[in-house]
Image (cartoon, rainbow over all chains, first blue to last red; front, side):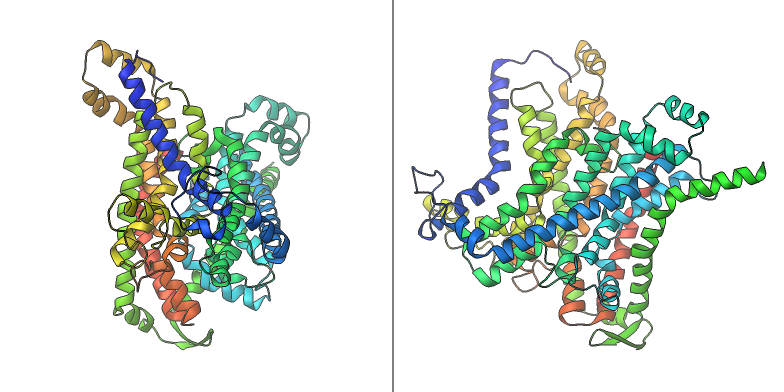
Length: 283
Length: 290
């Protein structure tokens, strides 16, 4: 970071720009929060500041969490179970493939061709596979099941886990693993006992990115589930039909859908750039 | 000895086999199945008989396809351009040790990890025509409210704004990371040579972050072609077909109208468009992995 002396007026302007950008960034969430705290009569009024401009109430949250537990808690728990399972499976597959690509040289195909092929999954539009996937799941009797959602989301997140872990393993010094191999460890044991503990931060980041992408996935969830296994994204899409423009309820659900992945993501600052660019830009 | 090597090879393949088998099963197989479906007729979600390229002919002569194609391209071009330019400006502006930058960076990750479908609904509240905050503000200021949802032009603008809001932080974070890895010495040398800041930008900064910039543009392009969640939740594809993207069309044709052949034909045409884009992407991106 280049640090020339900045004149005062420049620093003031910069602070103003920072404030404007922050407001722009926060505003939609802020609006959702205050809408969820408003009485229906206040929702369509232009009032920004609780207590000063309107009397906040927790009534909407109470209604959502006590009277509509089936929808809301059902959606949250499905999202949670699907996202954790998909992240766990994608992590196992990504650890193995990432280690393989970082440490071995494959002969029949070059390593970078295999990596590129795995990456190319992200470049395929989900629309290209959604209809055959629907038919496959119908044949297997998995429509409206959490398993179907887990299967599809592992597919979408494998590129992230493979690329993040390939980079992480590639940056480890070889000596430790070599001495383990000399001591008679198999490559698999070396991975588990020596390499894996050293890439713990990358593992956590890959897990959180997979979790968040699965949690936020909508197209497949919308098509594959309708009642028993609807995750939060599908529940909120149905809100409008049942609640109309009852924005005070809609906003509570939006917040419940948005909070878990965003809070988790804040924990992995260091890996966000690398993770989201699939390793192309090192943050 | 030869035997040992092949044993070793076999165990090495076991490391990448799960990933490859998984993607063959859940990506390549559905893709080929999709191709098969696009060449067949269907009735009530069941495949009937081979029809050759008939589905493609139907799709390519359907105004709804071309409308969705146009809408998708508009979104791709405007969203990619806007997010990249805004993100670059913010990254250049905040590439200084100023107060609050760490907090701002942390806050920037929030939109990236918020479900697009939820953002669409939050924006529906914000863009609401009768009593949403934006129109209320405009009316308070003595202007007319904007028909964000019911006007074909403004509905597109609303979708773009929501998408740009969500993804500008991506461009910002990636480009800021790239800017921060430019060695200080380069700037100091430029400062000594009393080069203007515009020239510093063109001759030093831009070449140093070119790779990150290309990555942002191409990753955003690929993702923008998939756009579905925000138009679905914010405008439900409307008014009329004004914000119906290609992915949206695959959904309506395949599962609402239950026309599997035409839906998969649209999907395949989308794949072809994206393949041509990613072909360029691969040629540039690839070098980053070598």
